[in-house]
Image (cartoon, rainbow over all chains, first blue to last red):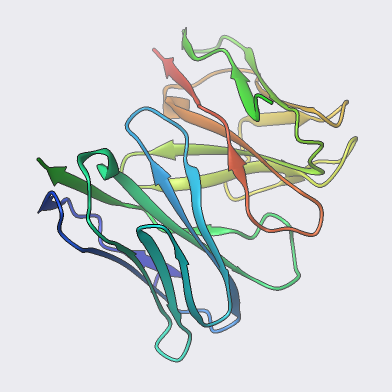
Length: 113
Length: 112
């Protein structure tokens, strides 16, 4: 079982829809969770950073962590064509090697006008 | 404030040639990383550095060498390029005591 699983999509939604992007993980020690947005032919851009369980909101974006289910989500409200990108989740545990940030393989999202 | 920059943006090499990719960051970050991104494989860590003069191996270090002579720069070297090293290479940096990483725009490398 891979440490982090992410549905690759592609996911296609109409403009204005609510989008739900998800990752599951197997390591119960993970406590730090991030979402990155990557536009085509660009570098990943940090969107959200959360610690432990709960929700974090930033504008149209909400990150949710359910540690009991080992499941994290990114919700995008009122989606826009400019949200079309690949979304990567990333996570790690406390301490240990600084190199231990584990990435999902990304979900490709397309928002149609 | 440019963040993380990478040089060059594109490069085509012949098998057996060597090259160096340069990463620079102006955020005074302690940590720097080199990843490769391939279709279906996601981001894979090649090498990383926790400070000036230090380097450590990541998940896929074979065929690559790195150096961090200055805090703001992290160099990735390919001594004898192979077609399997055709990929998009990303550099990232992160602050001391923090786990989030900030990425550069990438270098597209093709080895023929």
